[in-house]
Image (cartoon, rainbow, N blue to C red):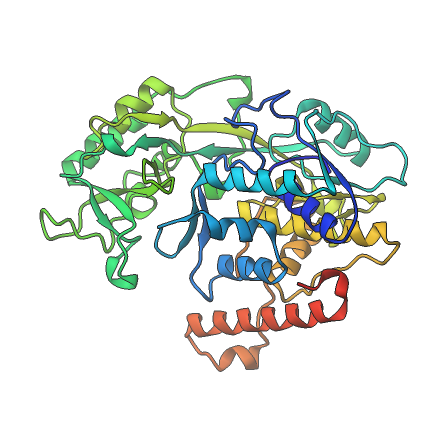
Length: 444
């Protein structure tokens, strides 16, 4: 097992559950990455959110399937959840600590703190590559040599984090995302702008200087995680209809919605820090401090971490992988996590679980399994293995990946999208239940 992020520990856990020993290689702290700050397993580099827990949503469905598959990651997430409305958000330090402890306490898992720089030449050893988006250059070259294809990459982002005590609560107010009245919670802090404040902030953001290296001449950004300054360049009001949307956020000082708003999400259980939701960026640190302190309520903000951009590496999975996560040319090698081209924490866990289960089946000499197409897991696997290899882009789980309903069945719901999606989720969970009943090797 190569990689101690989110996919690797989940895969190793599934293999150990099946009764097999596994060596889990993690190069940190022997060799660090530009984005990680600790040597803990399952460190959450970007945000601390596992996305929506709202029943009937695609992110909820994927997490619910993971729970029914007895995912270690979901079990740990439940132990360190922090308030965030409908989102499953965790204390990132506690999550990494508990994941690390679970792996360390499992006698069938040997954690090896070394950089894996090569892949086995023989086809007998079973290997799961879950080295993540920050795969080292040496291992990336080994993967390219094995797969016969050039490595691909895109650029991903990290949002800034501020000390809670430095937020001016006379200006910032609590509300839900996006409307307290929806669920009665007020888990987000909101920094409100009037028109003049927004205009000054926008101008400063556009004029701020970015970090530049030779890799940034033509960056291939992931569209769902664009830097805030890139979004701003698409139009003066783009931010107001995106991460700074003020809908449903009533400023108690005015009794009205602000012109724009920045939302802050709790980072840890003690509420000692908050991240700026959607404010990933590639600005120089001095400019970040200057521009972000123009946000009302953050005039004296103390930054615990500035926004960053880093390179994410992934393979051209549709040209290489089966829906079982196996390499077509060498079936005893499996890929999981962001190196396979999924985007997102939970998606990485899901592919790790599938790869781990199938690695254990290979070790038993049994046929590997493809998750039902109607499940969120099966839809992710189908996308990874079946998308157009010439236009392959990393993907989060969405209803677009799940099979649509037959026309007559869909017609029953008319324009009721919520009911239609709830029905799709029910179909998926029924398919998963039937799948689990077929083989005790993957039963929860």
